[in-house]
Image 1: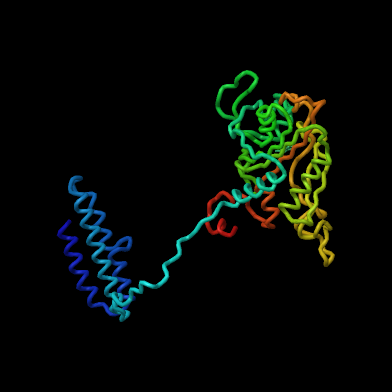
Image 2: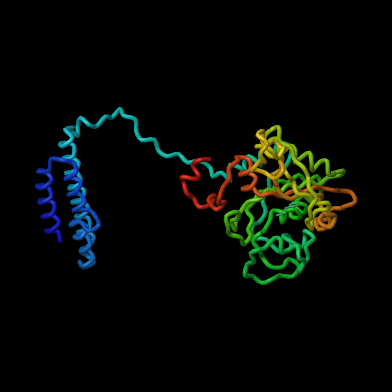
Length: 349
Ligand code: PHE
């Protein structure tokens, strides 16, 4: 095979020297190195050699390929009437390396953390692999409670242990509420818990892994006006100063009363209609749905060893992806794009 390689190089050298136009040069290149080119074919016979000879011959093949390629580029510059030595302009700016940036979800997480940290919230994280007790029981959802179905859950194949239950992938950041109460032992609590959550859904508006940010405030004298004020503060800081929120009655097991938080639409400014009289297509009647919230249920405070007579609190938990998309006005036809790592998509943010 060594002989054949050397022969191929000599023959090719001669042929290259005779070529006078770049099209022919390209054609010859393909005839050698294309999928069924003569060099490629020769290289394929490498595996028929005895194992101990392969490394040396492989190395030779590489060298010869490099020599042939050099010959090609020299001939190419002769054709183009440029001498290699003259062509090299050392002062020419180099090609700038591609510079990456943080993923949009990471950007959103730091922005959200900063907004809440400015008003005294502490960023925490709690386990993604969680006991059923923290994910449900501690939140007023005993085993077999139908509300658990709303938080469809991935179960780990582990034995169930007394009181704590089985291990699950945490389906919401609310699993951190009682953990935070236990960590601090005593109010005041101002937690912002941002973490990955998991639910077995996979379609254009759901990924099995997504992020939520959960706020929890517990102290003396906390009431709904604090909840509403915090929501408005967030809406102004995150979405812009003319945005407002509204609370719509809802139901969660772990808050009472419970609300869905809506934010006024940034396109029609809460009117539901555009200036030309047509209905706004971005929202429903001027409002967009942010996520759940409510006043912490007394049973949940008790689970965290906090006296519900002395203390009260509010909580909210929203999807990071959804909230961020609402801000940028990006209408993603398929939310799964966020996690498909397609650089053409990601570099836009
Ligand atoms: N955990 C709820 C969900 O995932 C949201 C929520 C958080 C509601 C806190 C009320 C209070 O939908």
